[in-house]
Length: 173
Image (cartoon, rainbow, N blue to C red; front, side):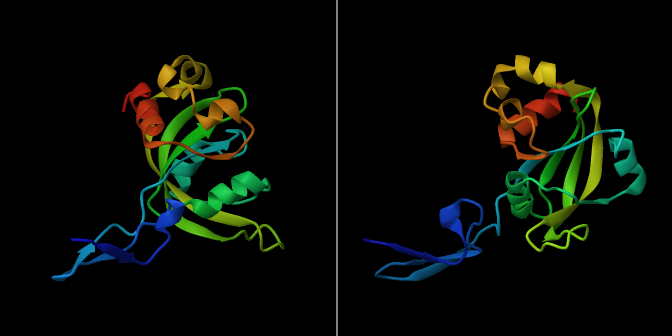
């Protein structure tokens, strides 16, 4: 018996998964409900002198604006509400210090007159018990392919689920 899968969404890109998938066979048609999108995992970098983890906790939520790098902008566009975010202090400390969540998906950056730039809102979830430094990440073989270690200048980076979970474990959570 042959089957034909029909569905809507952007499954071919790997980002969107069809909300419903219909299987048509010679005998019957069935519909299965699936997740609207796969969860994303991200890392955002910020100099603590400009805006720190403690500032995010105090504010309860912030707009992530002012990103003017094309690759980082493209990453912001892919962030969806509910995605998990590692909050990284750049500058002298160079360490992941907390876990945040995307509270609002991409929208036009209010700090720019150019519509191509986007912003997202993030909110704090919890701090790590211990900061995870860049040096300890470099020493961990599970993180050998992590984008942060190869393109350290980007301010918004995707991370894999395994990388995210490894860093969380290293931070004592």
